[in-house]
Length: 347
Image (cartoon, rainbow, N blue to C red; front, side):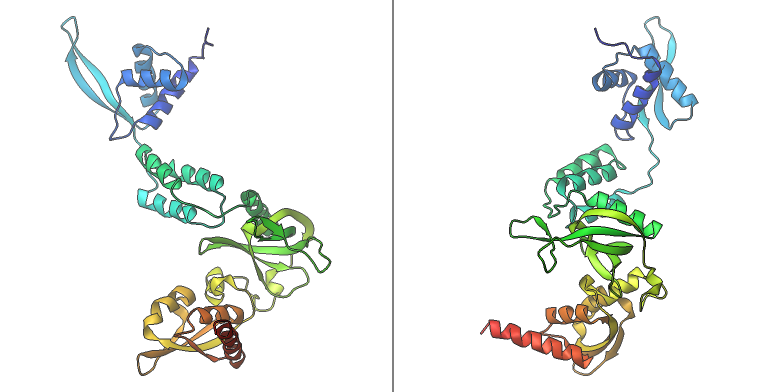
């Protein structure tokens, strides 16, 4: 014999059924509510119980909507019935807004598939039931590369350490030819343990990064959070970011991203390069609207930016057929040497 459930659950189950199965486009009758309570929760309700609990929910100001109709009963008397019930949701999110958040997760390169799917469906639950079904179909069609199942735990500890101003220790990994993460090693072949003062976390270009100061080093380094394993918070106080050269005012993430395209670390300095005007979209994408532009003849322009020299080296090589770095001389020489070596490989 099935266990008899307490009456106080009647109202809860009716409300849950309305939240789950109804909206303005999908209204349900009192009989349908009873059927769904039985189907979802195994509790059988009579019409009088459903009607009574709906009235109590209305008195408690729950956002329930219904249609009132008049009919003649079997005795020939007029009576009013309430039908076409639904739960009115006060939407805080438009579907287009939910889609933006979901897409940023689906096309990330750091979340393992099962964790990404679970997070996506949590966001989808902020929308209607048919939207949730569409999102569920989307998740199965997108492939992801993330393989670090402890990612959320890592992010949680990094946030906690940054707030508490504590150092963290972890192993930093690279992918091997077996497509698995392997810790970096020191000169003796031992797994290297990193000690870092974490400052900021940011998502960029489908990847998630931590900005921090490794113990014994100057400046700020960049770490991929999905390649961090075996992390612990230490009792050691973190190095203040304001004590580091170039970061006396802290880290401005917008400025940092502009100065470090592709998240290459390194000292920031002034750089001047020449390129065609049609690269303006790329200039804005990588360096923002703060780049100093001087129009030249022959559809060319001269661009001046503040940027990490390492980052500029790799950026300029991507556009080597159209971009010429003019300053600094040391960077220009590095680019020339890199391109000559590359050309030798293709002889």
